[in-house]
Length: 155
Length: 155
Length: 155
Image 1 (cartoon, each protein chain N blue to C red):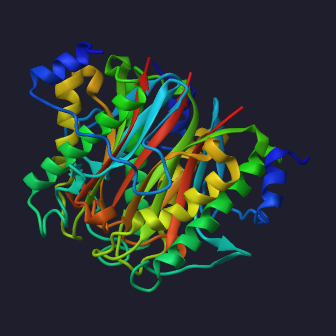
Image 2 (spheres, rainbow over the protein chains, first blue to last red):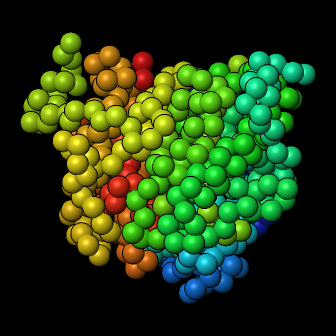
């Protein structure tokens, strides 16, 4: 199946990563009514966490943005799988939760989480524009620099 | 337009702040079905963060409560704008997420987040009573002491 | 009233704890449409926090799992009360949010939050399988080691 969003991904030169099995007793996506709840994704690519450590200490803001972008790609990969390959069923990205591993003096969480938000808007346009929070975490699973989850309205 | 909730705000002597443009690539409120998802708000007033630093270290619990109250006022300001001025469409505050920038030995998160919760109950009465979490964050955007988001059922 | 889930709890030798009044101006469960939003629960048993401190520093991963399990039992106790005793109305555990108080070098958040997730799956089977996030918190209310909230689809 190849639809409008698949074409948009190709136009942007983006390939969704292979989905990874969860590292805990949970599932990547639950569909409840008109919403898909996507579990928190870390910057895994090819089975490895690409960005480990604390943004603003071990990693730059740009590293953090790149990490958030990978999290968002993993969200879309999981969602596509849950929707039997059909990302055209996405009606709206509703809410994004962005957790950034960082120190007490870090303040650029919005720029970091933009790495995920920008991707959603690039792909879905206005339907990708979402509410969100961006906050600092003491640490994240597997030493990840960023974790992002999402609630998505679907057809 | 001036309704029941506007009258209640006036009765309480409250003025909603000017809404601020988001500091990232997201939007303040997404309405999906019967719910408004309001993005995390920080204690901004007149374009400045009023309470910066960590509660329990740089700031008192009372400061934290005052910060949380401003976050809640910003939630209502954003919501009012998204509802074309009509806060009477609020049916229920469903869920509040409260993040408190603090140190490892801080434990009074509930008192801090009450600064937001109390405001919702003062204004909306029983319809303002919500589920919530209150947790500690390593740090928050722009050095904010508190960040609060909300899910709100609307007519 | 005693139903299918009550029988399952008995079979597993589980007793739900007494519900505790919230330690803040919020309510434990809000039902909005087909979803119950359960407020963040800490590892309270008999009115006392059973696991205090930071997992990976003051407490082991196993302690953290035990704490998460108590949080999940409190979620179910609050939910049962909100559903007038009828846990058979649970259709699906949709989303679990897991906050772990920990230090900057901690990375086993998924294992800790499994303490809650495992319990939901033991009790509800496939209907207990949920999306979730697991993140590190600077600290949590009352010094708790873990806080867990949930969104649950109900009939």
